[in-house]
Every structure is written in structure tokens, then in C-alpha cells.
Image: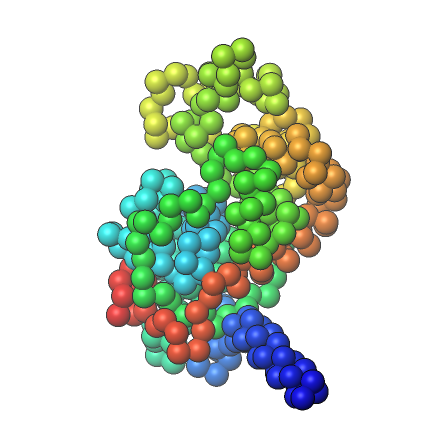
Amino acid sequence: MEKKTNQTIFSIFSLLLLFSSCVSAQLRTGFYQNSCPNVESIVRNAVRQKFQQTFVTAPATLRLFFHDCFVRGCDASILIASPSEKDHPDDMSLAGDGFDTVVKAKQAVDRDPKCRNKVSCADILALATREVVVLTGGPSYPVELGRRDGRLSTKASVQNNLPQPGFNLNQLNAMFNRHGLSQTDMIALSGAHTLGFAHCGKFSNRIYNFSPRTRIDPSLNSGYALQLRQMCPQRVDPRIAINMDPTTPRTFDNAYFKNLQQGKGLFTSDQVLFTDQRSRATVNSFANSETAFRQAFVSAITKLGRVGVKTGNAGEIRRDCSRFN
């Protein structure tokens, strides 16, 4: 009897393990080898053309991928036209060039008769993200494919699912851990702030009204704080944006971590990675070694690309990335 019970428990445990690994196992490099063998080069060329038109293509696409994966998983639900996730305040600052990059790449893929309506928008976004990292000097990496596009996108689903500029380390870790991402993964992905920009309103409290006792956040480099005040005067036009990385804002490198060492993290959620003793050693490691950062980033963005994916018969392959079929 005991032997039979143990066998049953083992069988149930095996099934659970199989189920949990099933989704990520269905994602694989070369997924479109037969149905659309040139998909990677088609997307690469389309993204390159878009990047040549405007640099914003890079940070916009990278941020779009992150925002998509953290809400309902990497299913291109962020791309759906309003009413959708796009209407939430946390997504309204997403630059249009990110969406346009996916649209252009999708059009290029579908111009190939063999590929038409075979490749998901979610996979095109994942591939485009790799390309913008490479175009700005970052690492190339194999992209696992096989995602399907989601059939749901709501404003409400975004609430409390994206990290905020004022988050502390506990809040950051809790949110990333929910998606199977470690503290090291979180810090490596934060390194993507080496590209892109933020609107003054997202950090104005740090330079004007941090607390009743001090108007400027003491963790902020004082010289940098004064520069930010010049660029972001009070009652500034809300459309004014500041580079996240004040040193090499157009290069995917480890300068972000060197900036944190100097108190030049733009958001509280950036600077806390250095001020909190629990994460400081990782920041120092990435600041001291570009290779260490690049390796950690590749690992982290690969794991990010597996979050909540739909595979097999789930979801759909959208004909138009902005609309459900």
C-alpha cells in the first residue's frame, strides 16, 4: 500500500514538473525554421531601417518589451489599440516609435509569402528587442521563439504590475520575483536604463521637495541635482525628457552602474540599487566588468522573454498587431 502511495505521489510530482517546464520547452530558437526560415534577418533589416530614421527606436522598443511581458506575460497585449493596456497612465509615456518598429517589422515579415500570418507579434517584438540592443552596442543573444499573441488587453490589468520610479529594493524584488526573476536579474534589466529618457515629473520630487528637512534627495549627487534643476525647472513643460544615462545615453554599456556609484541614478528605484547594501555588490560588479553585466543581461532578458507566454494552441497569430483577429 505504502509503495503504491509513493508511486502515486511521484507520478503527480512528475506531472507537475512536466507541466511547469512545458511552456518554456515549447519556446525554442529556430521555431520558424520551416514556416518562415528568414524571419530573423527580415526583422533585423526592418529594425535597422527604423533605427536609422530615429535613435528613439532603441529605448522605445526595449521598454515596450518589458512593459508587455510584465502585464499578462509576453503576448503582445501592449500592442492592442485603445481601449487596452495602452490607456493606463503607466503605459501612456511609451514612445510611439516602439510600436511603429513592431508594425514595420510585421509588415516586412508578411511581405514574404511563406511567412504571411505565420509569425506572432509577440515573437516579432522579442526579436526587435534583441536587434535594438545590438544596434546600440549591446550583446547579441539567441532569442527563443514560439510565443502566441494574447486575446485580452485591458487598462485595469496594468495596475500594480509595473515597477514605479519611487520603489525601494523590497518592492522591486517582490515584483520581479513574481515573474521568476532574481535580484541579479532585476539589477541587470535595470541596466537597460543606460538607454532612453524620462520626463521631469517622474523624478521632480527628488530635486525640489524630497522631504520637509531637505529639498534635494541626499542620495543624489549634488552637482547632478543642480544640473537636473536647470533642465527641469519647476512648472516645466511635461513633455520635456531627460536622458536616463547622463554620460553615454546612446550606447548600451555599463555606464549606468558607474553612474549609480556616483549618485547619478535618475530614479529612486535606480539609486537604491547602490544605496542598499544588499544590492550594492552586484552594482559594483557590473560597474567594474562590462562582461559581467552583458552576461547577466542576456540571462535576465532571456528569462523575461519566457514570462507568461502562450504557446501551442493558446492565443492566436494576429494578422494586425494592433487588433485581435
